[in-house]
Image (tube, rainbow, N blue to C red; front, side):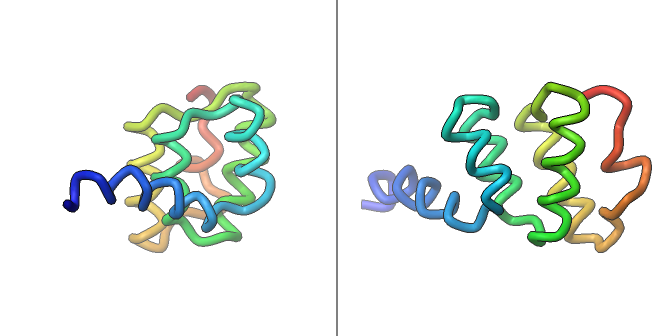
Amino acid sequence: SWRQKWPVSRYIRLNHLVPELLDKVDSKGMGFMPAVELSYIKPENQRLIAVSIDGEVASPSVKQAKRLRELDQEAICSLCKNCRRKSW
């Protein structure tokens, strides 16, 4: 059934994370669901997000990760104030 496959597809989706973000998930520095959302973002923007997470010493919530994904899909997520937020 699709309900049984859904969690598996989320784990598979993590393969689309850049190593910097995958390491954060592995070390429990970032939650699973925000990581799934961030996995849909272009790799170059994922790297910018990883740097921002390191600078803030905090990781995004699911809601914030979804918003970053939306920004990436709108092609406006870059070295801008939207990705370089002062606080998560």
